[in-house]
Image (cartoon, rainbow over all chains, first blue to last red; front, side, top):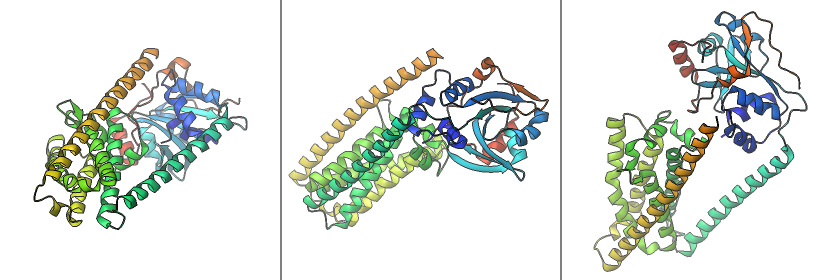
Amino acid sequence: MASLFSDFLTALGVKHTEGYSDRKFAEMPFQSMFGLANLLKQYGVAAAGISVDKESRAEAMTRLPLPFLADTPDGFAIVTNVADGNVSYITQHKQFRVATDKFLAAWNGIALLASADENSVEPFYFRHHVAEIAEGVKRWVLRVLVVLLLGFAMWASGLWSHWAAWFTLLLDCIGIWLSWMLVQKSLGIHSGAADAVCSVLEEGGCDELARSEASSFMGIFKWSEVGLAYFSISLLALLLFPSTLPALAAINILCLPYTVWSILYQKFKAKVWCTLCVCVQATLWLLFVSYLAGGVIARILPFTPSFWINFAVLAACYIATLLGINALDTALSNHLKTDNDDTTNNT
Amino acid sequence: MTQPIIPDIPGITKLSPLDMNGVHFNKRHTVLTPEILSSLSSKGTDGDK
């Protein structure tokens, strides 16, 4: 998702690429208005910080050159227009309009003014632009190939004509996506898609729970890692070994009590809703419905030796994958913590 | 580069680099909705950071 910096450049009409600009913003040695002014200078944009007395803010709001950054106790807003008693502004890549007096009451009088001209442009813009297009092409090629491979696997495994199998496939993919976003949240990695989903039930709920004690099992591994392992292996087993479906369904049933615990914990203990977590619980229940409607659950009983073999092998796969994801997650978490410590020490 | 035009209003003070370095970014990525702006105004604001 675009940062404050790239949004400001867009508002100023300065040619830039989001990837490079956001990276430069995140890597600023001084994470302050001073750092931002220095960064803008690299783009050929002159900037000046001002402070406005309370009595003068109403007049200043109508006369300051647009766009400008207005500071509030909860962050900066990019003021893009002031007209008809309203202020239009951008915050976290979203546009809002509010009555001028309401904005003035929240503004602390500090602002960053900027001046761009026809020579203002991102350094090495053309090279970055080509690279950005190439990244987009790579992403789309990957998506198309994944879809084609999944379709091929469904055909090769003989599940092509079973609607419940397609539904299960879709749910497993959704589960992987949701779990991946939860892992990102737990690592403090900012994701626009995750923020968009999280804001549905409660703004900030996912962040709060993803970093709480309840997000992990006795501090040994995170529930987001469990989810990622579960849905990944379920997807692979469905596509490569469809004979394991009854064992998959049995394991899904064993997961259902966890969904009840999760919902009760959010409602009564944490008193905050994590939209991503709720979606994962819903996905588990929808998987159960899919297995039930597809006649898979009816094939669990009676237990046969091959069922138990499949069950044991699947359990081993889940655990091995979970341990692998956990090791990777821990290494990544330590790496990110080291990076943050280095940045703090340098500023 | 053309410097930004600061309006000639008595209550405006240009910040020094040191002052500007004291104005930090908020790491919480809060979306400043109109409702949040209202709650900020009720807490009270001033130009000091």
